[in-house]
Image (cartoon, rainbow, N blue to C red; front, side, top):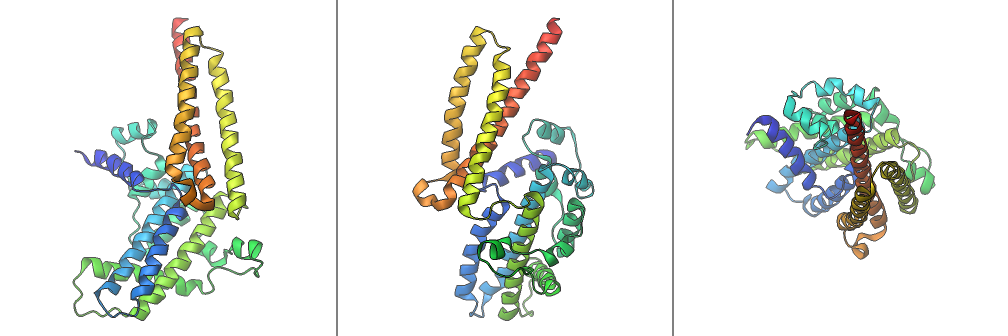
Length: 323
């Protein structure tokens, strides 16, 4: 199998290993279990403590690959700004065909190939894609939840940005030492790991706030507001699908109309069933269930819109050829 086919297969497998499409939703689940494990073992001077920097950097790298994908796939200016980070990816026809056929997205391809093995790599990649200095943005970003919902005074998330950045950079160094060496004579202090842990979590929180505000400025903060907004966005997408379907229906003959309506009925059943499956059990999903369900259904409806539009273009092409 060629390296190109490996890339397409790898991206598909990465998708399957995620429960949610959101970078922060994926991260929050991972960090919560990691923080609990660290609390249970941080007082132990042992081999296990060495591996927390490895897990932390896995979270950092995984989050930023998803964030880069989201930024690029959101369109310009981030799509155009990705030219430099994308330069490391060698394109051939198989990759172009996968992108054209929507097997993978441009954002997924760039995020999969960009180098993120050092703190400087993250800073450089995000600065290029955002078109503004990423670290400067993190130094001033505030926590909207803290002051808009909890009523706290407006203050930057990072009270010591330089120290946080240094600690995250150090965590990358520790990960490299642990993974690529056999450092039998090298002592890793629990206190240093604890500091790195705290700084990495703060760095990720500030990064997610900054990227979220860049993509969705002023978006809803409370779970109720997010659920309502997701429901409204889903209804808007369904309305768009209805309009696209009406335009197609106007071009179909009687036999085609029956077949198309049947396909739409089956698609509606599929969309609902798939959204329920992804969101999981309603009782166990808590207040976030409607958000996940609506966002999944919206993404499915967006793909259906492209399918129907694609058929219309095919119909136009056939009609032109007949003429």
